[in-house]
Length: 111
Ligand SMILES: [Zn+2]
Image (tube, rainbow, N blue to C red):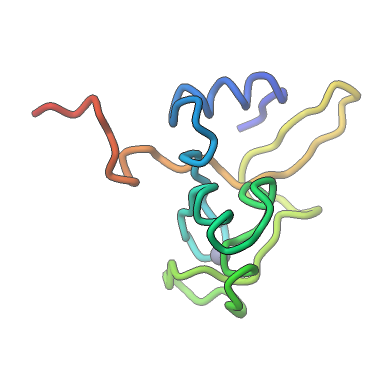
């Protein structure tokens, strides 16, 4: 998906709410889903959450197939997920947003 920065933020708020610590992204290399809170807990910058795998901050190595434990991947300069188009038309690659249902906090599921 391509988003403007504004569209991207509003989509994140729609999926996860206004609390950015609950925003979650998927690593395109290992499939690990991490919230911004996990990055803060690992001592990383919240802004790392959409451009690096949590594994870069917890000492993991190269991605292994379906490990979902984190790896050393980063989105800099490569395509791995979503793209944010800035006002001056630069395209910034970022990790895809996670599916909120996969986090187990889907409040609308009442069945
Ligand atoms: Zn990873």
